[in-house]
Length: 520
Image 1 (cartoon, rainbow, N blue to C red):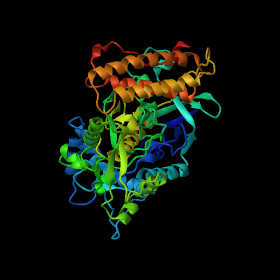
Image 2 (tube, one colour):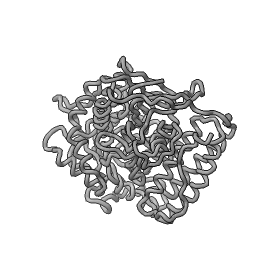
Image 3 (cartoon, rainbow, N blue to C red):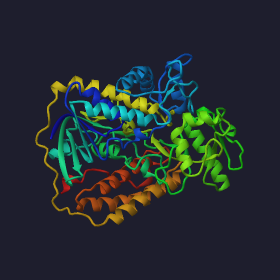
Image 4 (cartoon, rainbow, N blue to C red):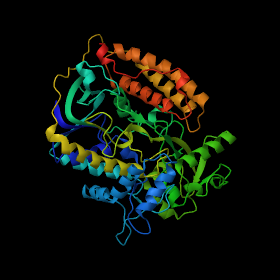
């Protein structure tokens, strides 16, 4: 199969790119589940843009830099903030409905780390509304083909032409991907002039996460194996407030907009505690709030704290947060009268595949967008609601850049079909499930909100054993989704540990996450 643009992933980043690129050539979108099963669909709070005075671009830039703890790429911050209003206009043109006040102005929320109200939203289901509009627009477009239940396994490079490649190989380029068709269980060779990886984050490398089950770091792992550069993987953001409801996965998110609305964090004794940690109290940046909650829970040996919105007008609470209200009611909590038990959970990967301001990776003809990428916008800690706007801004940047090269780019011929020789169907599903749980436990216990050099070393040692066992199984097994996901999750977990600020190069537990196909 051949296509001008191959987009892997169906969230805001991938679909907004597809809609822009489709004006210049044919786009094929592949996604491993249904189109709407993505992180975008779960985003509650909203999307950032400077809209009205007294807000300014300079204030949004400053808030982003402060929240990023000095690790942001200022060029990326300036780009996203200044292009945000234009891309909000595109979302509206595609059918996104943002809430408005009775006088017709956008109703803007404020969240942690923001000094002004600049969050456009649709109730407390903003991501779902944006995804709905994008999906409907994509399905209507005659130049876009959508293939659901297709699992991208590996990106195609000169490696698949028999060349030995490293991250320093001159002219290293991407020619498409091997994609598992889950309906036929066959692996298809998809050739493209340009490939966009927008598969979301990696929250499921942890035991507790707000991410949907599809967020297994597939794109980051594929790009890593293809020799693209990754960076800042150690900066995993933990959302401070997910609903404490043991046994439920993923953790249900309690949007930061609720604290922007006036909700207060309290200990189980009822005492407010954030004033001890930051002058912005419950509206401090996410990393500060998550560490504060973790510290208080650890001191007391407790599993959660409370979020209190009972002092606000009940009708206003129900109106602003209907999804949260109904969810909590379903487990016996009336948020207009009862405190909400909350606990931190893995939420967002601030690092990823390193890209420039056009979304280009270090591999030619390969782009990474959304949470798969590391643009440098977020630094060490993402400012709330900056992710969705980053996705559509960089989707536009990448589409412009790729379209300008389309006429002078050819398909790469000679890529072999996937070689199944020596592989067989596995009956070892129990081992895959157990290995996944073991990896999640390792990451949660040793690479969580608070880490040490010793904990990272221990995690690396334990993870290396899982890696070796998984690669051995992968080498003799006909690929399936569960095994490929496990392999990707272990690769991403490795990067999170390896790029940790405290871990030393002398740990002695390094292992190579490279292609195995050439050995078959």
